[in-house]
Image (tube, rainbow, N blue to C red; front, side, top):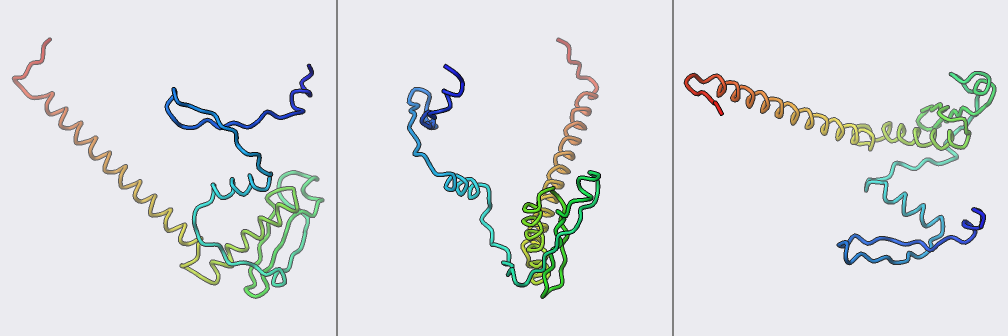
Length: 172
C-alpha cells in the first residue's frame, strides 16, 4: 500500500483523558470545522482584557511605498511598505516588517490602533497599563532576587562562623 493511501481517509481523532493510568479511556472528538478550531485556539491564547479603540476606515489614508533596509533588490523595488495615516489625530505609521502587503497592512493597523489609544487615553491606555504592570513585575522579581541573595550571604556567614569555632573538632 502506498503512503498516499494512508492519508486518503483520516483516522478518527481521539483524546486521552487525564485520569489514573488504570482508568484511562479514549473518546472520540467531534470533527470541527477549521473556523471553529481557529476560534478556540485564538480564544485560548488571549487574556481577558478590554479591546482597543476601533478605527474607522474612512478616517485612514493608506499608501504603499517602496521598501527599505536589508534584502537588496527584492525589498527595494517592491511597494510592500504600508504608510497608514489617521487623519483626525495626524498619527502616521510606516510598516515594512514582512514581504507581504496584507500582513504589513494588518500590522500597521494594529500599531496605529495602539498609538491612537495612547493619543486619546494617555496614561489610562492599554499599552501604558501593560507597561506599568510589566515594570511592577520586574521590580517584584528584582526584590525577590535581592532577598534571596541576602539570605544566601547570611547562611554562608553562619556556616563560616560555625566552621571556625575553636574547640570543636569534627572528626569521623
